[in-house]
Length: 153
Image 1 (spheres, rainbow, N blue to C red):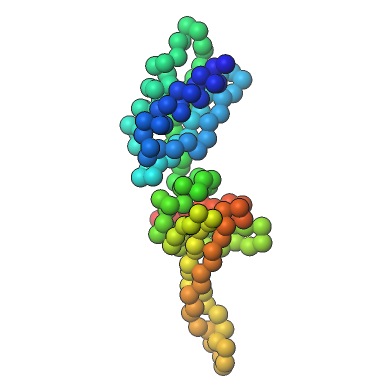
Image 2 (cartoon, rainbow, N blue to C red):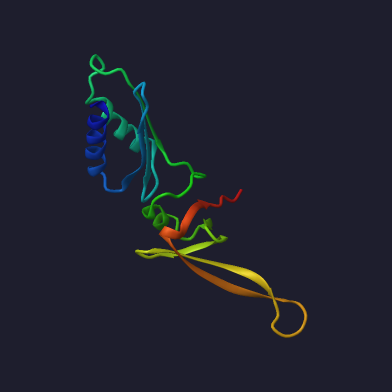
């Protein structure tokens, strides 16, 4: 019952801000509520506070004993939703499929998947040495097993 009520409050709060979207919602047996958010333009502390208040201020502490954690998806967290790819266009990704792993710049998204581009060194067709070639791979969302942004320091 509490989980349904929290989910309804969460859905209402997210409906009020169409830039935010839900990545994960869980609730443990001891009523620890965990909400992980992402946004088309990132997630601020104020966004987390707004969602937290929308849930917490509408639950009675005398009726329910709970703890609430609202957080943003971390920079090193895997990309799990197609909507997250759009905000990461232009960034370097590591994408693992069943068959192989790609590292390249995310240059676009489609309704079905993503487009990665990168440069690779390959042997010259004639003679010795190598030549740099531009590679491009279109990967369907259904084929992606894991995708992460590669952070540069």
